[in-house]
Amino acid sequence: MENSSTMMGPRGLIKKYEFVRVIVQCLYSLGYQKSASCLESESGVSYKSKGFERLEVQILNGDWDGCIDTLIAITDLNDERRASVLFLVFKQCFWEYLNRGDDSLALNVLRKRVSSLQMSKDKIHNLASSMLCLEGMNLGKIDEGVVLELRKRLLVELERLLPPAEVVPERRLEHLVETAVTSQIDSCLYHNSSVAISLYEDHCCGRDQIPTETVQILTEHKNEVWFVQFSNNGEYLASSSSDCSAIIWKVLEDGKLTLKHTLRSHQNPVSFVAWSPDDTKLLTCGNAEVLKLWDVETGICKHTFGDHGFIVSSCAWFPDSKRLVCGSSDTEKGIFMCDCDGNEIKAWRGTRIPKVLDLAVTPDGENLISVLSDKDIRILNLGTYAERVISEEHPITSLSVSVDCKNFIVNLNSQEIHMWDVAGKWEKPFKYTGHSQNKYVIRSCFGGLDSTFIASGSENSQIYIWNRRNSKPIEILSGHSMTVNCVSWNPKRPKMLASASDDHTIRIWGPCQSSERLSLCRRNFGTHFICKFSFLVFFVLFPRVYQAL
Image (tube, rainbow, N blue to C red; front, side, top):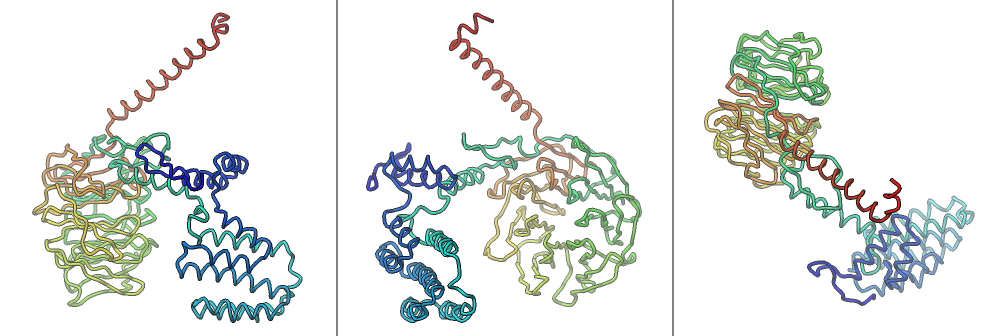
């Protein structure tokens, strides 16, 4: 069957010979030696070519001349790969000659064989220096078992370099299946679960995997709610309002939220809040007012930064929860880093740092991203101090960074959200449209499993949800009666979303309950049907048992 061209599969795209080879290789890798050997015998297909089987014998027996001849005869190797393969063999051969005390043969390999490969000088020099290092190691006393083990290790390395026609790549079937599963997950618009994907059927999630229905309305704020943000551990939600207060909410086990602390100390509306990475501290910023640091457990204000002329437009924490960075719309203040007692550590000021509208520190602490003068995004690497600037065509109102530190999104008043990569490899952003934003500050966020989704408020009182791979929204949520200013996705509960609105309320969103009930009914019906069918089959096959009952 080795030369068979028989095709298989519904579309006739799979070569049967290759398919069997891959299965045989998989059986061997899983430890099913007898099954693999039986399949090879029955099908006449081996996952190793005749040439590789010959090579295997030659290497295990130390027949280096025969091994080299076999490798040279392989036609599917390009010159670079062939040189790498031969170098590994010469290296093993060289080492064994030294081990036996045949220094002249070892030198011959080095001078004639290795030097003819046109390898990098570093590799050849390293191999030559190893000869000097090995002289005093009593190599002749090394056990033959060690030598055999090194030969087996050489075979494993060669398997990775030789073309598939000679030997099937390691764990090839697993790779093919995993690629197929990944492709199905990527094409699933609603995928939002870490549960393992079944191979028994094609994967497709329903809209019950993401928050689409209001499950709770929080009405404690007495005026417009401007900002909401879940804590990093997902156990709390903080909100701020134009009623000059901020509130810390506790997320209970059943998913309901209850008021923990009301933070009243600001004289002006509270424009935003920021959780420390360890979730023990919370920053609140009054509109054109002071910045305050609160203890989350007690609700006590631990420190007030600045005075009433102190203007902070945004702030963010560093991963150690001991340092924070603030940006000011006052050009003289610029951007400054300080500790929790307000002691300045570093500052970026001057004409290169105009007014700061928003900023963020990537969760790994490596990059500081700031929005400057409406349309510019500055990305500063805090390790190398290398920086780059992205210029947008329309004013930017907010900034949000993904948990994996790879991407960030900005809301524009042109009714678009742009996603950029932090590394700077993209020439153009990925754009999301559909929501309404012309004159107010609207804040969006990443969310769901692996930050798969993007959610945003809107001036038309609705919430928009996109799958990151699609520019059009997959869900539009209705419930609020006025502009939705901010949304936050719970980082530990991928089906929980919070939204803040000018209608004085916070809405907590969860999966559609009717969808969950329908799914449960289907599971119950399926279980009932299977049980009933099993009893019928049992009684048909074993009527005497039925009569005895």
